[in-house]
Image (cartoon, rainbow, N blue to C red; front, side, top):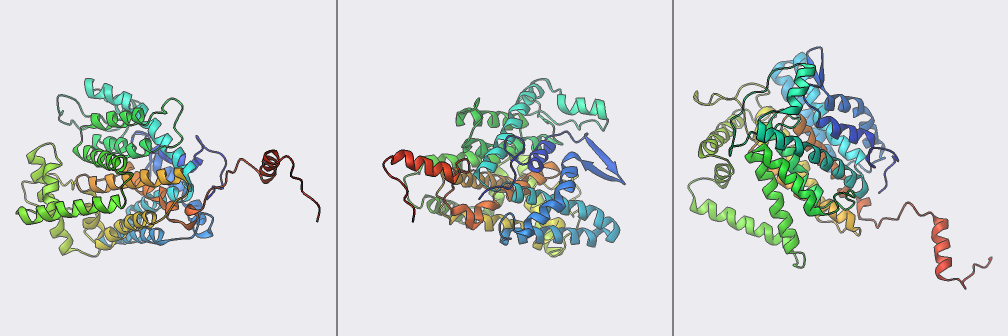
Length: 441
């Protein structure tokens, strides 16, 4: 499946490249328009949205499939939930920007990542950002000076950074993001992409060298959510390397997890989800707080299953001062209702199952599938311990769309090298068979 663009940054189409670069710009680099904050990545999404819609429904990027419709449903339903919460005027404003972020970011990945070369170019760009950010993160973690954020705030203005308690004797690095959690997740999300990258930068040919940068950037965030996203990917990559000669290896892994789930369910007085929330934290207090968030959140879903509570405050005990809901999937269901949650989770599941059942003749395409699946599984599971907001939610939607081409029928076709024309191929055949001559009919 070829792409219709020929130019871009490192082989990646300009809309997608600018979006990834915009995700890594500090939040101070934004403008206010009528009370609406337009960050760099929102501006890119607004400018590219209509073009992406035209590409999708014109058939230029393959037929519209199940995941596309599910993301569209999620975006519309979330906007409807916000209108229900805030009224038509305010709801269209807040719901409209969420619609642009969710569907617009997905469509950028869907329309501009269309083959293994595009996927490799995307992976390279994300990796190079992580390389640069890791250097700043080391300085931040040791000195406590958040160079990128503090410099941008000094030049462009903005509120001071909220003090965050150090961990393990180190300060938590922000990079250029709103919070160390988001910086850590961004670095962790590039682990599988860097490991399976088939066309590496000449200075980073070793996959092990590439992954060390993603490990370093993730570590300096000192975020349990980022650590869990990274740890899950490391485990899956390790399983992939150790079981390559074993048939039905992923079914075996699924069976192992099902067995573990069953054992925990039978032997513990807590659900497996609560056990997971307890141990994937830095402290017992944090684990207990996440369990209480889960209990309060599920109770809120039971009270408002269809349209959620919008941006309203959720009911919780008085001692739970913070209104932060550190669970991306739970927060989605609480805010926008079960249909929005099921549509987004369904799109992820639809793509995962579709590409898992396909036989790809190209090794590059096989590596793209492995990178996407490992990355998205890591982010999805880690999403139960941390909330994705602002730039990281857009990154999640973009990465979701970046794997959509793998579910299209064209992805199973054997690629034909585009750099060799038909006349060149005939010339090569003649060189291999010098005595053979074409005779006129």
